[in-house]
Image 1: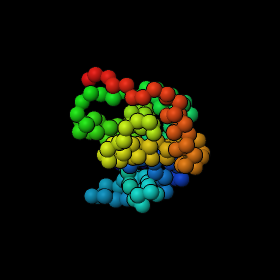
Image 2: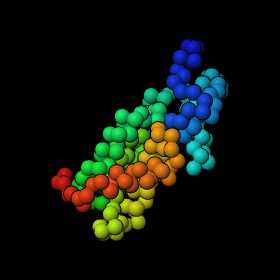
Image 3: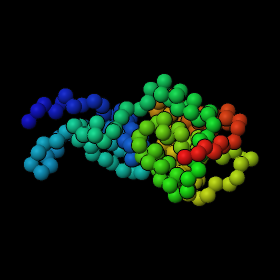
Image 4: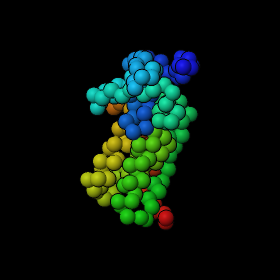
Length: 177
């Protein structure tokens, strides 16, 4: 079997983004025998969900697991938050599916687009329950990553995100497609 230590990209106590679950902390790197094969695994703990996930070190790329975004990517995400919302004129069920896909993509830029598009100012109409759920899910994931990237508390990250959203003075602009 090939030397598995070459696959180690992350360290214990490092935070990573796992696309379908958000930000988790690597609590261990262990070797386990599964179906007669020795596998090296990252053990990732997601505190909010009280969930532990084991990801083979050689499957990191295919799962799209990644490191916390750097400052430049966070700044790019914040620029998107300040831009005008781009709401497609399609049925809500279709848009909701697209938003869900973006939330679970693990892409911070796609995540910031969802937060921007679903954000409502107090002067705007109420959100439906499903819109609110998607918005809160995207905001939570974005805040977790911003807090880890900037070394701040999640509540501060939410405040930072909301202040960026407030810088967009115009209401949602509908686009065709």
